[in-house]
Every structure is written in C-alpha cells, then in structure tokens.
Image (cartoon, rainbow, N blue to C red; front, side, top):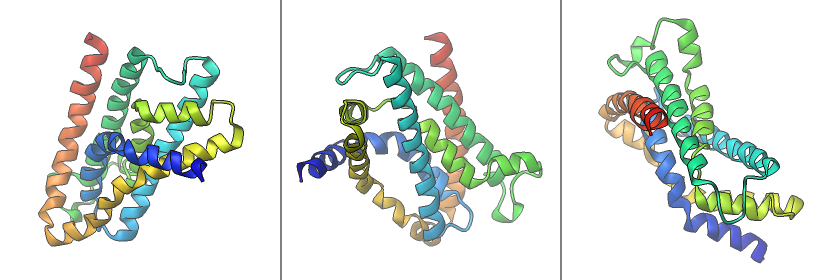
Length: 217
C-alpha cells in the first residue's frame, strides 16, 4: 500500500509546480480553441500532458546514462539553460499556432493563415503535443527527485510505476480545465482575449524569457 500512497502524496503535495509551468501555456491555448467542447478540451489536454510526460522520460533517461542526474541534486545552471530553451521552443509553438490557425485579430470564420504549411504545422493537436514536450524541459525539483528515486534508483519496473503514480498525483490540479468549455460558452469574448494573450505570451517567451537570458546572462 505504501508503494502507491507515497508517490501519489508526493505528486499531490508538489502539484503546484506543474500548474506553475503549465497554466500560462494551457489556459490561453485551450480558451482560444475554436468550437471548444469537453471532448476536444480533454483530448488536447491529454496530448499536452502526454508530451510533457514523454519529455520527462527522455531527459531522465539521457541524464541518467550521462551520469549527471543525482538523487538529491540537479545542476542549477543546466536547469536554467534548459528552461530558457523551453521558453523559446514553447513560444515558437504558440506563435505558429496563433498565426497559422487562430489569427487573434480575426474571427472563427477567418480560418487562420492562408499558407497551408503554416496552417497544418500550427494545428491544435500538434501544438498541444509540442507545447507539452517543450514545457517538459523545465526542471522541477520534486519531479527530478521522484525520477531519481523511482526509475533510476535500481528499482526496475516497480520504480517506473512509482513515477507513474507520482505523475497521477499531480493530476487533480488540472481538474479546473474541465470547466473551460462552459466558461467560453458563457463569455465568448474570452476566446478573443485568450488568442491575443497567446500571441503576446509567445513573443514574451521567445524574446524576454528565452533569447535574452540565454544570450546575455
């Protein structure tokens, strides 16, 4: 029983780290989706979280094999650099989605950019996946502690499930997302606000949170 309770409680007690990195990306993205309903809302959220989970697995495995992932410590300089890269990538993904599909200054009938390649590349499903992958580059101390303790601590398959339950423990913090379609129907202006916010956020991520710190600090 402890095997299940410990990772769940660890995830639940540190789930605010997840929302801190995910909410600024997910909230404007989902609110701005055309014809948002519960099924589409859940599908895009799942793709985002799956992409984020996959990036955690990739980085964890790479760092473990490279011998730079320790159980109680992760290089803060490397963590900061990865976060800056994450901002650039995530901002780029949101920018392509904003320009290619949503066009904040247009309406739903506009259909986004007339450039087919940009429109296809910026579709909502790909945006959700790649945004999740890029957000996964942010180093969360509790998360890396869980990875080191579970998957790369010599516990084998049981360690993998330990991390699964840790990740599940963070999921309750995403439950408010279920109400997004209702809010958009009650206040359609939220979609326009979200689209403009996504465009501004993309520019901020790329320039001020990504390129400037990466190149000049």
